[in-house]
Image 1 (cartoon, one colour):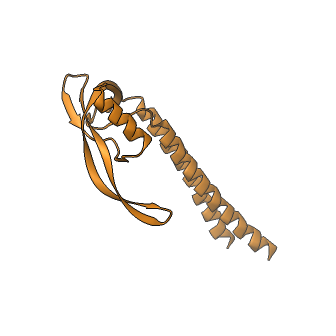
Image 2 (cartoon, helix red, strand yellow):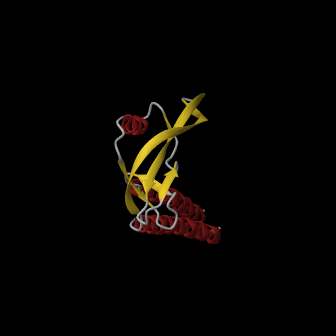
Image 3 (tube, helix red, strand yellow):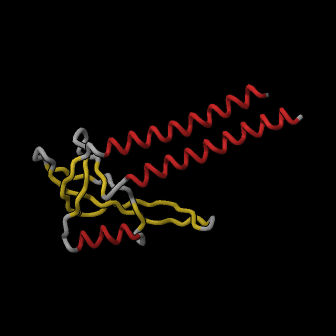
Length: 153
């Protein structure tokens, strides 16, 4: 049983290390994205089912369609930003930018210019690493508990 516990602890440690390495790599990769000024030309919409207090709610979510010019002069029209509900804070910001015809600064990948994002994604990558660290810590604790049970018995 101790061997199984050691394997579980090693798996938990590997999960923590993988989460940290992936987050660092993604944050470093974000540095290769290029800034551009885009303009919202419209919105795509789709139906979505959300659970609010265990009650399924059918909502319509929206994703802005952006037009921007890349560094090499190509005009891109893309909607790779995430779909958001109409009552969310970010949708209100998108809609205000759309109504006032205000340009927005985005970052896009030079290898795949249709991939872009608005604002920073660093918080997302850090949160992903924290989730993996918590899951890894729980797995390590399970392995330690198994060893404690085996030694105590």
